[in-house]
Length: 328
Image 1: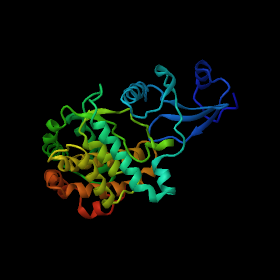
Image 2: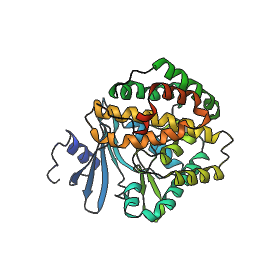
Image 3: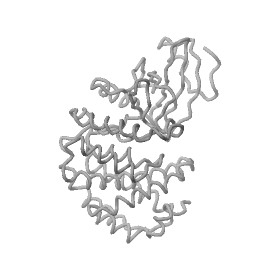
């Protein structure tokens, strides 16, 4: 084994030895918003990704469970070479470097085709029975929307009506719960940074460990109202039309898309604020204005009237139009 990069977690070489990769060379890959760390592993002609998801902050077992389910249903999750979930180690297939977002930065003319393929994957996912995962229930939706009042509001210096916020979301989200039965597998973080473009036109899926069973509109929103990459309203409309045309979406689908768009965007504003305030990661602040912009479009839908009224009463429109204002 070559010299290890600085800061490698204890036990890394022992795990690779047990996995049969004793002589591998190891390179660190920049991390994401979690406690997980990734390493690229090479041993001759073999290559793999090493994920360290250390307890108690992380548990790789859900990733392994969802990967197995996706693979068994014909979707392209990474293959698993070896794992020791109790210690946080997973050695998995290396999907390469062509993330959809990075590829589009170099190949902007391929945007429509790439998004169409991503939408078609969600159409395919909708034809499958829901996986054996927990439900995306009203309590979970409410807990996520609360991140905005818990983290963003105080950081922006706002004294808001928390009880009224909860009541407004209950009124807005309640109607869609029955419509998401029996539900579909919701990957929850399905966007251009978590889709890998593979040889032969396949799209590889990553970062799906938080999958739940919920509403089919959720992942469509996640893809088309992407906090990390600009998706024009025109492309959003075209891809939403593509999904609706390919499925029996139902008359309430667009209203539920707006409901879940606002719900997800409120959650993201809270999460990105928390990443800055609690975890010292200021780079997420620059993404918040894009999230507010998408949320304003969602709030304009009549189905969001109670939540829109709360925002008008508690977060000045000028502040929202300025991307949420200054967070300190």
